[in-house]
Image 1 (cartoon, rainbow, N blue to C red):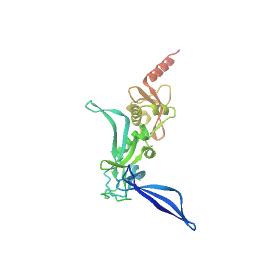
Image 2: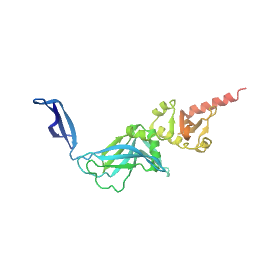
Image 3: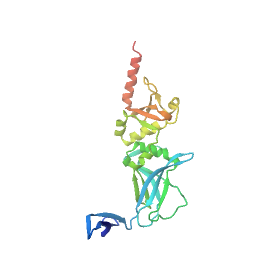
Image 4: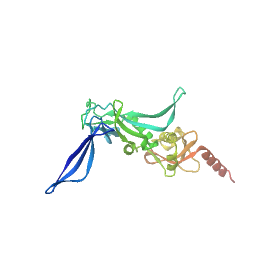
Length: 277
């Protein structure tokens, strides 16, 4: 029995500039007959469409670098003018300027750098090129991703102002789990339910302790917590503090997140216990 796929219908999509090609399996067993329902495939007609994937590569003196590969999967030639890591907050975030004026940030982005500067001009159909994160910006992206849900960030490719390709944060996140910050299971439920501004404040406050000897933590505002060996308390925002301890390789573990009123009550109780006869 011989089988081949044959085109049974070709039409243009009503909602996108694509061709819809319907194919069906044709078998020969004495006589020709169609088998099964037709399978539709969309083919780029005049649309610009790129595939974005992510990978890592090692660079001497820097370590692992996060990069993106962009491929023209349409049928027309077009330029890629920008590839960027982008994020958007659920709610606008307060951003105080040095002048004292407070602005409101709804999101932002970091442009990736072409890995091969000699490859320029429009992408041919099927052509792919690579882009990477600026090393000096990477840690900031790692910390941001640690405070946001994967649905709030992505990597996108643009032709002019048109987004022609996008890779969701759930695919990028595995390459960003390098913050040196761990969250204890006890603290995780509260951390996950905090607003984005609160999570970002916690991550930024704790990040300042990474790489330091424990006896240097006080220079960053962390103070030993009375009654608990090797535990420190660090103010993260106006109404919350974090209890932290040092992990292997001078990382930081968030043991718990507490409101300042509860922490003050804990300290008062300990002092009363200390003065008992």
